[in-house]
Image 1: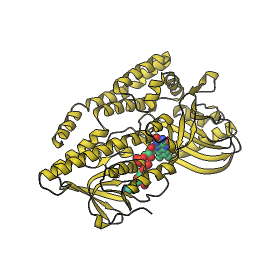
Image 2: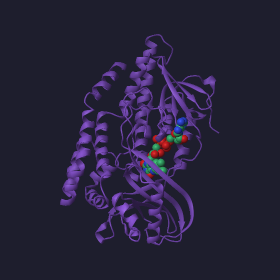
Image 3: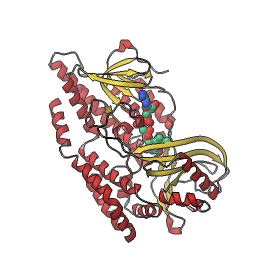
Length: 457
Ligand SMILES: Cc1cc2nc3c(=O)[nH]c(=O)nc-3n(C[C@H](O)[C@H](O)[C@H](O)COP(=O)(O)OP(=O)(O)OC[C@H]3O[C@@H](n4cnc5c(N)ncnc54)[C@H](O)[C@@H]3O)c2cc1C
């Protein structure tokens, strides 16, 4: 049983919509600093549905490596079936023990006094320096700040422009099998082989144009997670097609299913415009455009961003209390314009201009990937995995600064074959134009936000 919100609690400092990894990670940290937090979710105790895979170094850096239930010492990539098509990646990969991670975050939330409301968030109204959330059960919860952590539901954050993402689509199964051909000490990061389509010309042709790869986590010789994945497409590759390709692949690899433990339908919006920056409703994770636009990964980036966002919230709540005390107002009472400035400062903590530039580069990467057929995709990844560890690992983990990303792009170009270079030049132009437009949009952005931030302090 979780402690419930009741009307006698009144106004809380932070209302969090969504008890996914990002909502709980922020709630835990803000409550630890002594502030009242209420988390609203229709099923706060339900198991998280997604099968998260992460690079072990990312989770270790956050002290979360005890929340991995299986670790592979290395990863493999098959570009094609030729002997040189197999690449070994010396970077450990893990599957997140999502039950343990959720338990850990919930326990910390409860220990720090977070209260929960079992409902859907319907709407938020900001007025007179305060915010009020209305829930599906009619409950109204007033708060100083509101965080939308509803993932890809994006329930409360607002956009000025149409949301136009690419989509990562995947169909996966966690299954008991008679046997499978993969080593159990390596996870299969990408398998672009396409011999399984040879007997079905229609599938071969559609896979050539809109290629998908196999992502697999072999837990033992007879238990494996298999997922046919479209890295990014617009519109998304339909689930039925992904399922048919996975079945054809399993037949080719001689994998016979004995029992399916879990089925996963994955559709992740990637890239697209950011929400309006700044705005009164705060965001994190899927609501704040944090999915890596070229890979679909988010959980590590978002768990890394949660403390940054939480600390910015705490800093602004402190600033608001100080300002209220100076004006002889009750604690937490702020004017409407002060509340706007508090939110702007928090948004700035997760989207400083350097991050926005980095995202523009990743979106450029996504636009290039959207345009590649199977042959070009193989050429791209042949060059990508020939890069230094600093470059390819840093790119996948969103660790490279914008300048480092330029170096990454030049190295990728240098490592590419002449044919691939020509492709990158021809197919990269629209994305490059988009990136430059995105960068132009950052002019004045930082100054505007910093100007507002200065006034709060
Ligand atoms: C199938 C799948 C597999 C994925 N695999 C990976 C992976 O391997 N690695 C990776 O890094 N990322 C992966 N992702 C990306 C993934 O979306 C994020 O990493 C992560 O789940 C985002 O966390 P979040 O807290 O922002 O949102 P979510 O995990 O989506 O949580 C949102 C929460 O908000 C709640 N909610 C929704 N609407 C409302 C409402 N109106 N009111 C109140 N609460 C609401 C939901 O109940 C949920 O609890 C995957 C995504 C999917 C869909």
